[in-house]
Image (tube, rainbow, N blue to C red; front, top):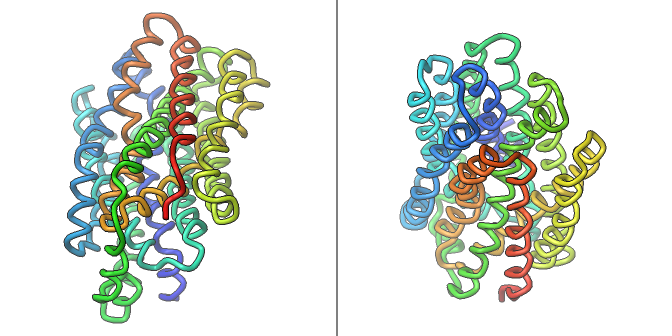
Amino acid sequence: MKRIIRKYGPPIFHCINDFGQGSLAALIPFFIANFGLNYYQSASIIFCNTIVASVAQPILGYVADRWRVPWFIPVGFTVTLVSISAIALATSYEMILALSLIAGLGAALFHPEAALLVNRMQSNELGNAMGSFAVGGSAGFALGPLLAGGVYVFGGQFLWLFTAIALIGVLLYVYAFTGSAATDVIGESKSSAKSTNTGANDWVSFGKLFFVIASRSILFSVLSIFIPILYITVINGEASASSLALTMYFAMGAVLTYMGGALSDKLGFLKTVRLGNLIFLPSVLVFIFVPNIWGFFGAMIPMAFGVFSQYGPITVLGQKYLAKNAGFASGITLGLGITLGGLVAPYVGHLADIYDVQTALMTLIPVGLMGLIMSLWLKEPK
């Protein structure tokens, strides 16, 4: 039993952590209805969640390169999920912002060390392994909105379910990843530590990759926030069903993330990233400019492929470009790759307040073009 949990531990824990991250976007209509927020204020909740993670994750990735801190994994996802649960106690907008910020700190603790765990356990198919890890996060983002949707039926107290999930995760981690028997698996040997810190750093290529990371992060964050809002305001769907639309998007993302990892082992990591950007651009045009249920759901599959298929390959590219600092690279690719877009989201929300949701979403077109152009400028790592 321990061996099975160790084998699937990284994606399981990634799923648990991202339960919390994925739920925030689905709670936006709940916050709007109960606290009278506008789009800018709603997007600022995601901003608070991501600003601390954006600053902290590269630093914590550097810490993970220098010292082994496996306890970052259970502490990280526990802080994230308990913070989401505590929103049930929130009595003001400011309290929601504070809890969102604390949840972001938990995600910052989790991601770099968890990505290094995958690196230390890597097989010959690193793309597939990282794809499986990324699938865990995508599954968490898919299930998070589904669980968070319970607030529309049972009220805010339903959010305490996230704390119960965190407790289960801690028990699994303690059972399978503590003690001398788990030493080799979690990379505690000296030889394992050296294996993740050999090679040369290509900072120029990583600098170019950062623009690809930023592009994907903005696409991911903005769509996560505005899919339920677009469903309600433009498609005229029910608020209670908006979280199901987001869950559907993330569920497709989980499958397509795995496909992206497997595809990268065959096509190459960089070609998979380029393909994702090429497919995203026409599909997002349909999503924005065909304002009906057919355009909404018809564009969702190719649009999800464009966003999610890049996740695993970008992470591996980052670790290869910065072979001597894989933890720092993971803090950027896995950390900022999710959170950076949240820094831009309030401004997109402000555009939606001034104009409308569809006009605001047009900002995704130049962002997607930036990701495509920068990916074409990159070269495969040595």
